[in-house]
Length: 399
Image (cartoon, rainbow, N blue to C red; front, side, top):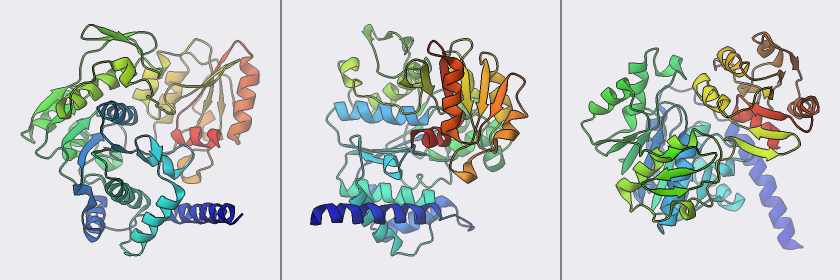
């Protein structure tokens, strides 16, 4: 009975702590990188205890992080992963060999960092927690998903063994620069003296990487479609995630792993436990219900290639995204939209505002669960429902 009470007490404290974390905003002049480094120095630089792979870019970062982590684990390495945002709990952001940090460990590290009074934002605090936890867990590698940009990002406080940049898109122009050249240089800021893998050989990204005077590697060429059969250097295999775009992400991950470890002999076995939550993620059938966290036009263009004609779309996006263009692309195949909202107020656009951008049949339903139920009823058992536009929307639906 006492143990049950202790578990309940820990859970209550965890929920309180998460609320406190979400209330932390930057509001200061110091770059996230500087504030995070200062805090890590007070913790005796735990980020230096293992090899770090930094994964930046506009699209595909999360999947590449998962793939690199899985491949390294199959080579016997103990691997920490750091990703954002989460779908259901903050604990998803910090994992070791696929296991989320426990509530108890989360609280212990939080309290240690909070006692330093270094005035960190939510993302800076979580990043510091990840670097500290990976040291305590004695990992061999930490695969860190970069937040926004790269040069001044909180994750960019190390000399990584390897940097990965998936691509450069149009997101966050306000902060990263109006031109592709400016944004490429910001993302290339995660390159130090280490090699870099470029997922897409974009001209401006190559130029930005060349300025770092380091080894530049491209992704491996993988034939086939991740929805069916893939082939790499004569080996045919399947991976347990959907999305034709995942073959490109896997090519990037394979190039990264080959640079720091031996390549697994059997890729199907090595990737048998791979999960990419929220990426062409089939949640149920009758009707087919898919979740995908595509949150910019270039990502939406990729998922539309895999979607059937006449699908029903449950959609929300953050007000900072080009949701008009996203809706326009989805309209190519969608028969009807159900515009909704997420339960993260600062990360949601009003359903009515989204509806103004739509030129096909649509409804505005504020509650995401109601929107999904209405979409399933409209689609019928033989139809297809897709929830997309924001990972925050997917998180709300999974709660």
